[in-house]
Image 1: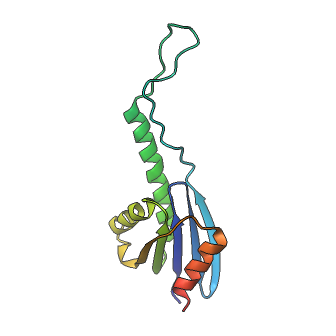
Image 2: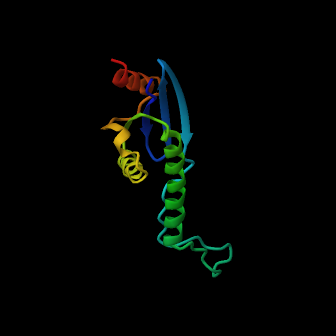
Length: 134
């Protein structure tokens, strides 16, 4: 029997619903990603004319992108043995992940990519079961 996976994803977490022989299992993967912070200046030291502590914006951006890359790779590792993959979620993460799956030669397993708002775990599970069990 085919292993079917439904994935709700945004940049903060992913919820994976795996359907295997009629049984549904659910797994959450947090990204532990901090929001992007764009500081115009920096933070002053405690002394009035002390040095400013500024982290270069490109360094912050690189750290953010590295963290995002590790998060997407962890999600892809959970999808490798799927026969069919349904991807849905509220933001850009679903299309970013789709491109990464295509680059990893898993693109032909994607059955649909849908935009949906935030859902609870039971709603996510019901959506995946409704899509695959017909």
